Length: 136
Image 1: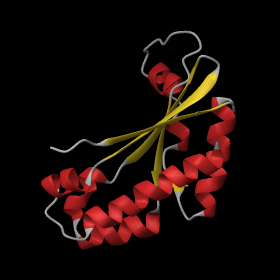
Image 2 (image 1 turned 30 degrees about the vertical axis):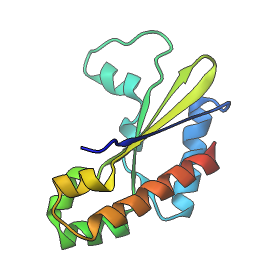
Image 3 (image 1 turned 120 degrees about the horizontal axis):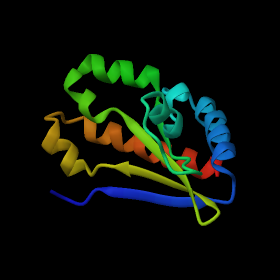
């Protein structure tokens, strides 16, 4: 399999401020944060009785464009396995670290036999990276 891509960047904004700003940016482009009430992992783990280290502030932010996703999944529900797109944020060395994993076209084709999906998914990956850059 070909190498997948890890987009890694950082901002001097607090994690909370970056997430708030990202929410505004994604909305501007017709996206949503799908899991707003569950993205703060310290709270999610705590609800299940798991303790985390003091200062643990990992956010797993699921980004979705409902209109595009609905059309895509209606055309081919096999695409669903690659549809969740998560941006991870956490504080390290006084800065907010931002990570986003995207998959190569070859890996997408290896998972889903669908001619149009790799290009469509690549378009979404690029837009998510642009939105991250805008929010930071």
